[in-house]
Amino acid sequence: MRAYELIHRKREGGALTGAELEWLVRGFTAGEIPDAQLAAFCMAVFFRGMTPAEVLALTEAMLRSGDVLDLSAIPGAKVDKHSTGGVGDKVSLPLAALAVACGVRVPMVSGRGLGHTGGTLDKLEAIPGFRVDLPVARFVELVRDVGAGLIGQTDRLAPADRRLYALRDVTATVESIPLIAASIMSKKLAEGIDGLVLDVKVGRGAFMKTPAEARRLAETLVGIGRGAGKRVTALLTAMDQPLGLAIGNALEVAEGTALLRGEGPADLREVTVALTAEMVLLAGRAADLAAARGAVEAAIADGRGLAAWRRIVAAQGGDARVVDDPGRLPQAATRVEVASPAAGVVEAIDAEALGLAAMALGAGRARVEDRVDPAVGLVLRKKVGDPVSRGEPLLVVHRNPGGEPQPQVAARVLAAFTIGPGPAAPPPLVLERMAEP
Ligand code: URA
Image (cartoon, rainbow, N blue to C red; front, side, top):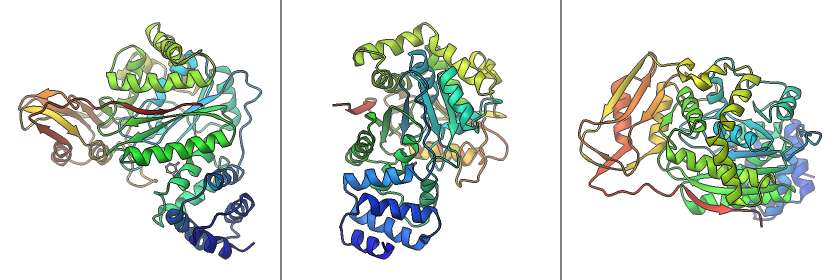
């Protein structure tokens, strides 16, 4: 085989066989096929796309570039959730606890935040002592004994994806649905799961800006998962305004934990319950979706979700006292309100702009190597549809010295809010469901 011929065929709109894709991925990972040829291949895929069979074969080749965890010795269904990323999306934390409380095993390998979007690992590390860099053997023990393990990607899980993503990042080939889908699914399938719930975010704070794009990504992800023999459900959920009120790592831990106490914002609860219920259903722990939702709601109401969260935090070295006393989480030096310049109704909040404002405070990363400050961020006081009077706070900035100065943060925040005469209704949260046939 010659890489040149495969690139040429894809460039002309042809399809590659599974064996050809396997050869390409293996050669690239071994350093035998140069970056220039893989970059040209990615650009050809960017313009020509891939057939469902090609995307599945590419994913499986990337998956086989590393280890695939074998959790078959652990009884019960192992189900994870993956979100394509958003602003204020702390769902994974309460979701893992609630799924465990409902009898689901949750092997969760997560990522870090980049740009305007947050990452689950950064949120977990805001809990003093919480370790996400655990060896695989410990991860397997956690899934077996505690019900959930929450760790970061190891060097051995889908290493081809790590190399390929770095190459796509510098060759303007990240935004290709087949390449995104293969990247996500190669990592998820390496976790040894039986089922997967996908939360494909749609809107101005999401990777996919329109429902049509999000639907295409969801269909591709679901097709790969089912092609690999897994049970998969996808929800398309709204990400125009931030989810919940808190943006920033410790602030989001506190809000996710409040949900488990039956408190906290209704939109966060709705999305968390919807996704967790899909996990419960895929795991075969409920007869239908209504029963699955009922089980999740009961685990909030009777405190089993909160108890599971205490166990998860403690098992990974975290200070479980934060669960009942959020004051023990890292706190920013100053809290300053940003007041509304006008009276009216909040008609829109640009999630991406607020994500970037939180990043400028130090809550996120502009580059992979940046460090995050766990304490800083933003807490909204108003969401879309809320009336506001002039001078009333729109949000509170939690800032530490070293973050972007308050006047600049306030200017960014104000630019993110659209205040008009209204009325404005809060948009629907769950836009579409692609369930098991
Ligand atoms: N997330 C991933 O894991 N991979 C992509 O290519 C894009 C988003």
